[in-house]
Image 1 (cartoon, rainbow, N blue to C red):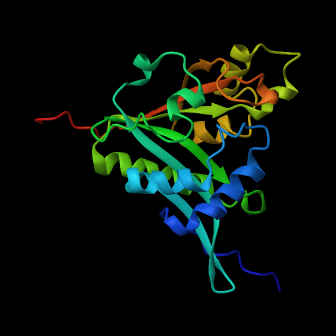
Image 2: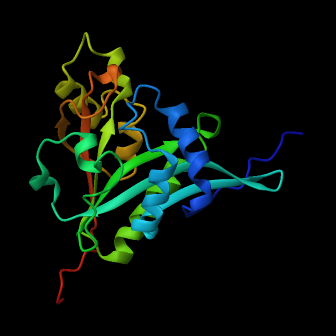
Length: 220
């Protein structure tokens, strides 16, 4: 008899999850600098700053809650066409989210993490769904993010980074991160050059956007 898969719950991030989430960050993103990693005190700051925009995937194990996935977000005023080229450190202000605007009409996804032991269980899709529901609830125009491109390392002899992103967008090839994002309703707007520390993609990332089709302009 095989063990049943654990029940995964998506909840708003709690202060007591912070240390687990930092440990998961270090495990998942070994190439990131200290300024790019989200430390426990920064996770706690996110919860205090914008509690409804922080989500964790948790399971119960031996009577304790274990964090197996997480996503961190903040609100900004600029739309994807207004931001232009930017780096991860700049937009997340070293993960202190100083660019958070309580009245911003766009959500910026700073992080999407799934513990390696719990992948292929739909956790990222559940977290993306939580973000989609948040955007509808807050009546935001949509969300955007800089997405890592870990698969480029296998194609660098065949494509430039721009050609690679276009090939993934056409579904000619797949990328471990971008392809699931596209399946979750995101569109690629272009490449963010030198966005984040990741040798696999020469530090580049994709600029992805998912608009809120149910957005209602103020006054309507």
